[in-house]
Amino acid sequence: MLKNFIQNINEKELIVSGERVLLAVSGGIDSMVLLHLFEQSGFEYGVAHCNFQLRGDESDGDERFVREYVQMHGIPSFFKAFDTEEYARISGISIEMAARELRYAFFERIRRENNYDRIVTAHHQDDLIETFFLNLSRKTGIKGLTGIKEKSGYLIRPLLLAGREEIEQYAAQNYLDYREDSTNNEVVYQRNFLRHKILPLFNELNPAFKKNLLASIDNLRDAEQVYTSVLSRDKKEVVEETNDELRIDIEKLRTTEFPPLLLLEVLSPLHFNPSVIDEVFQSLEAEPGKQFFSPTHRLVKDRAFLFVAPIKEPGEQLFYIEEADMELFEPVQLSIEKTAAAGFKIVKSSDVACVDLDTIQFPLLIRKWKQGDYFQPLGMQGMKKVSDFFIDQKIPLHEKENTWLLCSGKRIVWIMGHRLDDRFKVTNKTQKVLVLKMD
Image (tube, rainbow, N blue to C red; front, side):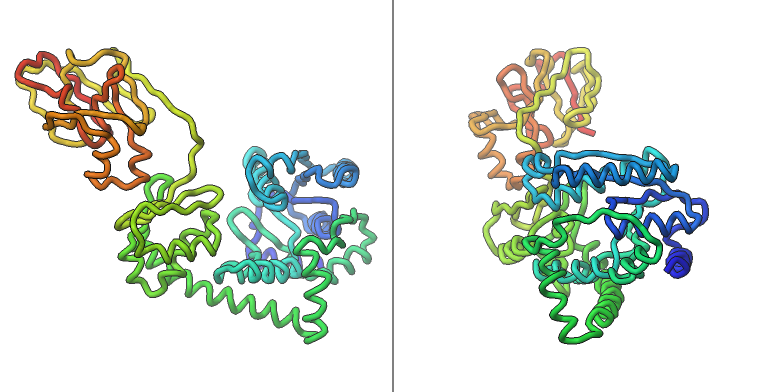
């Protein structure tokens, strides 16, 4: 196994000469076999261990076991304990997902801070098969059916060349000590139910089941390359990304070869459930304003576009412009200039506000608009609700929520990026002009 292990790493360039790798070691049989293989292979490595504090003394025992091992063998090591249940509660996610997020965030931090080139986990062929069936049961695209990959960014899984039986044989032949996780036999967990109840039935049906399924997954990976190529081409035409926001052109989406699949590929990485994605697709003909949510993002259906942006924490933010300020960086980038009115030419742009300096009082306030806000749009005699102005201008919901108001006291001076208030405009009586330009 050692020879095949090293050969596989070298042939596929999972680790190249001179690279240092960080091994994820839980203390279980898979990770201890991984650690032993690296001890024999000559690669430079360190060890990272997470204590999720989910199994009481058993979790602490795993940590002690790994600590004693790395100290005895002089291996660089990093340990971290997490309050996983609390993190899951606050984040509104499952315990399994919480542990995954905490684990990989910790590994990545250690990798960066200590100049490791790769993170190595002990996933093997049986993990790959179980993941295939779990994803299949949850509804997934072709990527989900290709399962765990040997290399994904900084992450590598060199044990995918072996199955559970080979790993157990290697541990026995080399007299390796390891920790047993008591929850591995509890079939209340989906993965364990598959492992102990479902997959043995497939093996009874066809002794070559495992070999054939692994070959089928390889075929799916080849098909995925074609699939990805086609959807990547369409995605460039349909999706526009600005900062952390996506804008999906509805009409262009409809004209692609596989609209539902393209939508699935765009929204799945943003944690939208496949059922929700189906609802989004069905809503393309619906009235604008409908909203859909994932744990991290919100999608708003407008007339011509789907807008997708991260969910932001609630809370009012206030920003001030003092009289001496010449620029502002938050919440928008703004250049500020004072000039004499004589010979001044008004800049006709929604991103520029030319204000009679004598009509305002410093400090100016920048805040988000609220229901009940009124202003006098430039060129109009009467007052108008800001919300009605947005409706008249057909401004989409996501843009409304990202719009800022420039205020002098309680009066709105400028709906930034949209319209100046008529009460603050430059007239033939203006002596000094305040010019505010959004960059």
